[in-house]
Image (cartoon, rainbow, N blue to C red; front, side, top):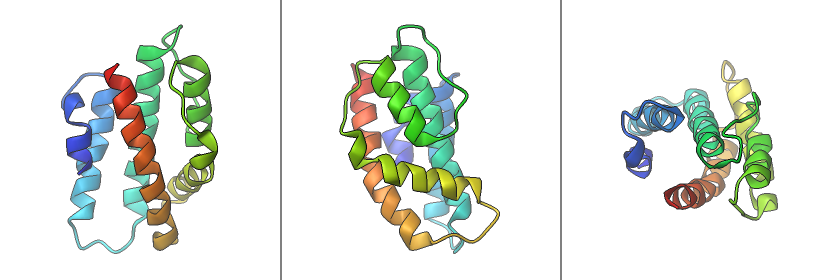
Amino acid sequence: MYQEIFKAFENVKNLGGKAWEHAVAIDFFNSSNIEDCSIHCFHYQQMFECFFKHILETKSKFGSYSKSHKLNKLLEESIESTSFKTDKSKYRGDLVAITVCAEKYRYNIDCQGYFDSVAVCDELIKELIEYEKI
């Protein structure tokens, strides 16, 4: 699923391409028998971070991005630095949850809570993909 969403970035030599690579990993984990979702979370957070930074690099006035790994901060930065607009309150808590899960990927995490956050954030991915096409 994610590999298809990021298909336009397949083997691209920038952060969009890195997002696609993480999408391939996520699809693998979705089809595996691995029960611990923390590795999925790590790749999901990385996919999102790379794509936010791709958007900031290609769509912002200065073509740059912060060093933050916090997805909610990168959303704020994307809204402030580009013409991308969305209801950030809809995603803030779920982006924080995914960031926290990724930071603790060595531990067992609440998989149901994590996947609930993924379901919400998948909508933001779709919004960002549409924005990127502009």
